[in-house]
Image (cartoon, rainbow, N blue to C red; front, side, top):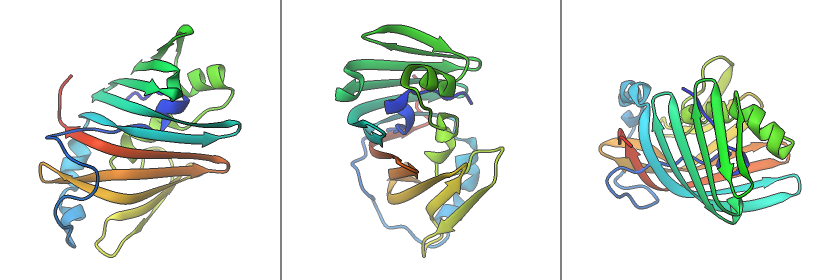
Length: 200
């Protein structure tokens, strides 16, 4: 699937399904994660809402995030200090468009767009996998699990993704808080609403 999101939208991704409050709902058990793998593999449509914080060289900001994903097309809306009001990142195969108060900017990939507009880039093309606590295809990865078999950390492409909270949505356990770090870049995503399978 295509992914795009500039600096703030980078680690953003949150989805909402039946209004879910942050934090775990219900109790996780051994085997729960293993039993939902087929469903996670097939999940490519969702809506997310939450907050994202980013700390990078000379940057420390936060924003509200609304993310809509439908197969290979995604739309990220960031509001608040992060995007100086309103920033929209719209992506599909071969084209990503960023619209904010400075105008509209396009590039073939989200990484290229971030490099052009920000001077540095993030592995945004992996986010639709990492938001599901799954490694992205195409590169080696390592997963460390907690006592119940759920991913605790995922290491891939030089990044370490930490999962500290889980939310039960329509019988599916999904990450509620994600921290991604690489060098002096750190992004935190707190999901306030997940809607797996929700259409635009």
